[in-house]
Image (cartoon, one colour):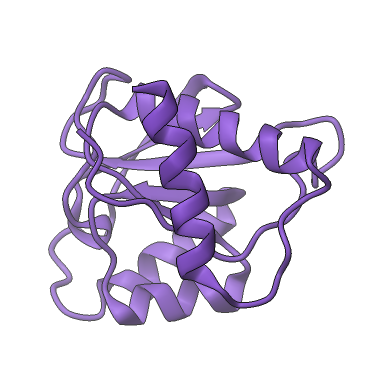
Amino acid sequence: MVLAVLLVPCIPFEAHGAEPLLIAVASDDVEATSIVGNFAAHSPYYLLFSGITMVQVLRNPFLDKGPGAGPLVVDYLAQKGVAILVAGRFGPPMIEAMNRKGMRYFLYSGVAQEAVERVVKYLKLAEKKGGEKQDGRARQRSELLQKMLDKTI
């Protein structure tokens, strides 16, 4: 089940050379088949994917931080090389921190592996079509991605 999807801002999929972007998925468990965590900053784990392959599991060191954990999590994940974060929800301070770092994010409800496969598919599609316009129209990007996801369900 997909609740919503939002992409902010877009850079080419292979932006870091030949290596695929590192994608982190907030999760309550450590398996690729785990459900995407409902709250990005307060999920116990972050599943790291290179392309569609899970490569590492990180514990959230700020799980017990309470309010203000979002920007700390963003800094932590950015230090690990994460370019995209997937979760059920993001608080405004976390969104601001991701925007400052140039980190993109997707809102997603469902299985972590499926979320990553859809993100990668979308990024490849956007790259193939010449990339996404960076015009600040997040709603239009969300609608485009939702249409693409609807075709794959």
